[in-house]
Length: 365
Image 1 (spheres, helix red, strand yellow):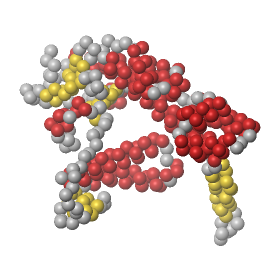
Image 2: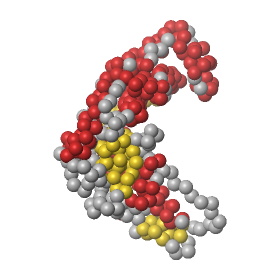
Image 3: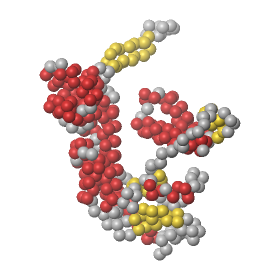
Image 4: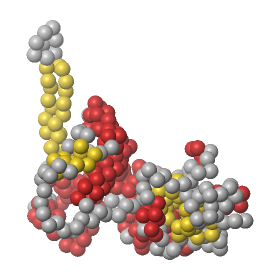
């Protein structure tokens, strides 16, 4: 068969599906292993724990890709635990006062309008929060706290809490340690087994796992992703949206980037794969020789206008999406924002920030 055929190739499709199925199977097995060894995982460095990738053998995926799969699963669990700890430590506080607001006029005058509880942070709450974040899911003892003060803890932690902690009696210390361990136990109970429903996985070129091939003779596809497997290679055609980027410029430096192969079969019943850049390069600016005044206005048609009359425009839709979402969140109140909404907001901010940085770099040039 022709590797860069412009038509659907049965063997290529079957091989790609088998690749996704293999990635899904291995990631779920890795997830079960990480869940069973969660304490060891949280105490180990990410790379050190990823050396366990040798436990999994694959007929399709090379060893460096299997290690990348494990690295990503480890990051999923570490982020999962980090989020649970943030949820727990956010509630470590002391009630300061109970505020009742009453109606001041009308028929309801004197009746309770609202009730609010005011909280405050103290040395105790700060110390408990610090220990939970430091020990994560490890049981805390007085000996471990002493070791943390002098061996593992930062100078700032020692300066803030050492004198305060040493001034307390044994009964107080036992109560604090008991409180910390109860919070940590609650974090451990809430850790869930992560299950992957698709074969989506990340590619890095540290092990030369892929390359971009150009075929000028192909009338339908010019660019192909040559995915290097254990005993074979598969050429996946790339649909390039030239409205977003110049393919020549993009693919010339693509080997330094991280790529995602996204399995969309369950959601779309489609044979299309999403080929996406997961990590962008940082913009660099040249040394300047003169200074110019520049007006910046996100809401105006002219985004940047220099003092000598040069200007650049901005695509309204890019910013409009972020502003619309901010308006929606503002209606519910930022304090009521969910984790999912926060992640979406951060994603939109990164997207607009990157777009604006590109516009500024283009304007300066």
